[in-house]
Length: 74
Image (cartoon, rainbow, N blue to C red; front, side):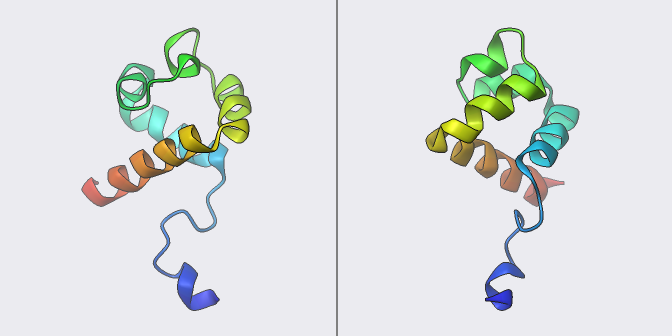
């Protein structure tokens, strides 16, 4: 199982860590363009985004994909 995780860029990253890095790199406006969800558009905050993303698998998947894309182009 450890071998499966060696190439996983999300391994060891919490959702909060991912969001903080994305906001720092891109800002809320860009993130709202890429992942069309209200918690990125209207009064965005890490807390509200975490609450929504933890309950909404499709949105979390999009955020994780954005994060992986960011890592590849850094």
